[in-house]
Length: 469
Ligand code: SF4
Ligand code: SF4
Image 1: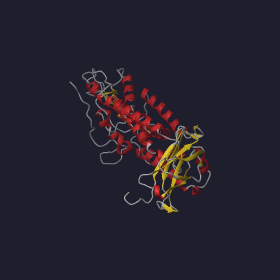
Image 2: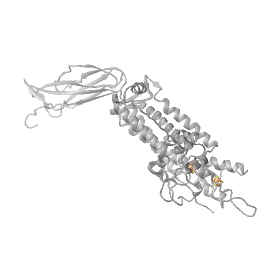
Image 3: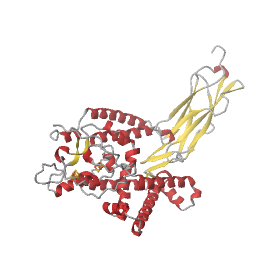
Image 4: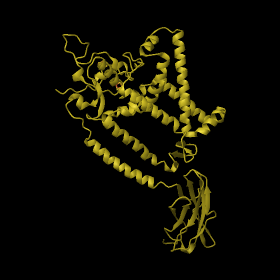
């Protein structure tokens, strides 16, 4: 008979007690193969986070988001505010990868790679464990009276939390102000850079508040990704679950009873960082960390029973273990089709990304045209933006129009711009009044010394039209 996993947990949310007060989760220590994998992933991600501002590519940090000057340097590429539309591809690409990964492997992102998990489990809970001891010692001390031992441990823990929050927020800031600037600022008074100091202080406060107090509630209450699980996963998605058929009825073994393999030791509950009981079925609060898998495997190994009572498997296979795992499903084909469309769009977008931008504008507040000595005069401006991080010289050239005799005056045909700089360059265009007619186009071409393709610009020539036009 097929047995479906119950989807909801009985009782209040895992982070709440029945009276509505906070249930501060104290996960027990756990070891095992998935815990080891997570530690390696945490370490790699932490190193990446910390060294990205230090690595130099083309004389710039690998990732440098210079918001003040609206310049962004990503792995050797330089972008400016006019390239903001590329963010669409970046965000949709990230979202797409998350959707596919979630469909295949459930909340593996949450359990192994989300910054909330990496920092909470990899740093802050480690500090707590180091200063306050293992779970039982912490629970006992917390329930006891305030004494010297309890006070010094709490003070030391929170001091370390503050210290690490400051450390991480400084590194975070270095993504936006560059490491040399950050080091320079750190040696000066905050009053000389109040904005950066304000961001750093706010960030430290948020990190401390989140990791010292809010913790798993961010996943349970705020993060929208967890709430999308039911739409992103299906019954073939790899999730962490409890084998009801094998485990129930649970209880301590005695000679007369025909009990399942679950000895109701509650180890899987004690190690859970969100405080849930995986035996109640798939729950919104489960972040897929696999701590319960390692914990139960440890128990089963001690009891000399097969491991995998709590394991990674699909819901379909938890119902009937004889079914083969199914990787390819209709929704995956749809995702592949969408992915191909995304790749085409991305390639097109990157190919059209120019190292400079040029636009033809009219001077703000000026008259559209001036009539003088039988000539109509238009003044336009070429707005040049150097998107690279080095100085480039640009050349502005008129493009002749055979039909009429435009006279172009380009006072500064060659313009040198520093990396990331922009400038408005005036161009005057004259035409005999008798030749003015509707729809005439002023045409200019801009060449950059380091770009193969010029940019052609055009704007309508304005002037008095003869009656009847
Ligand atoms: S139920 Fe298991 S996998 Fe889910 S969060 Fe708790 S310990 Fe991690
Ligand atoms: S760790 Fe395993 S045996 Fe112990 S309560 Fe959880 S499921 Fe049952």
